[in-house]
Amino acid sequence: MQYDVLIIGGAITGSAVAYWLTRLSPGLRVLVVERDMQYRYASTALSVASIRQQFTTAVNIKISQFGAEFLKSAPEYLDCDPIPFHENGYLFLSSTEDAARHLSKAASLQNKLGAETIFLSPNELVSRFPWMQFDDITSGSFGSSNEGWFDNMSLLHAFQKTAKQQGCDFIQDDVQAIQTKNKMISRAVLSKKGVISVGAVVNAAGTNAANILKMVGLDLPVEPRKRTVFFIDAPHARFPDAPLIIDPAGYYIRPEGNQWICATVPSNDRAVALDDFTADYNQFEDSIWPKLYRRSSLFDAVKVLRYWVGHYAFNVLDQNAIVGPHPKLKGLFLANGFSGHGLQQAPAVGRGLAEMLVFGEYRSIDLSCLNVNRILSKKPFREDAIV
Image (cartoon, one colour):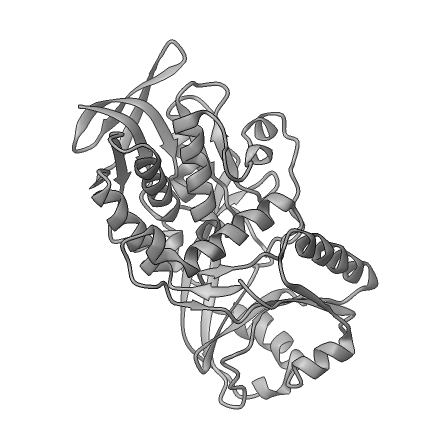
């Protein structure tokens, strides 16, 4: 069996690449291989599904600007109903003068590129959000449009449905080996389907991406990092129109109807096993709740309704995506290491990587600063607004 492109990983990134490939090049033979088509442990399914333009590098701002536009006009691209999008915005807070200067500088860049970010003083924060305490805060930046959260699985299923209609095949299988010839991708060995000939391979395997590269003798600094997410009820704090709040105390929180979703970065943040989905359930009482109550006394009576665990495909070098052709092996393309931003970046990255495969160049957003060479030379491309 011969395929032009094999995509390893059928969650949001792989499905977006498949959609754009078959849209840009009708008739291209594309196969997507996914180990679990139920997506029980996929980062896509377990994400809090947020999107923002409040980044500190132009490429990430542009990527998410396209993502927001894509979400709002999804039926124009995909065979789907409108994707539910709660455009409540993001609120970043700073607690030092130096951090305030960084927020202001970032807001200026975002505004220059067309994002509607508003830089707020402590008094302006009090005026906008009187239910919060800002006595320890030096500034805030609020994304007043194109920021919020959306229905992750609706987007995933729409990408897949449309890609299939355009001729792409999706199968549940596992890649056992990738074979090369003359420093070029040649074949792949699948557990069920057996040996297939491929012209190119896209590694979109999420937290398993490093293991895929090991099959061809290459390294990738991407590892699974565990995040426990808490769904809580706070009966005295009913603010369904609140933004997603990034608190410098070290947690984030956003409304989910009349309840809330919150999480923090664990103090011992480190690589975990691919199958480690054991919740760190003490994080809420030990770390999040005291800080949350400090921000607003309305969170005095809080009950954890449920919690779940998701994984970040964490790029150890600089927490930025790794996108593009691999210079050491012709026909190998990467879309890895999104470090918690893959869902919002998938529409633009999928389009860009498809352009690279079909045309040999980026024709919309230039993603070259996310290239593999920086990984090989260990020269980070820094994004300061990492959550």
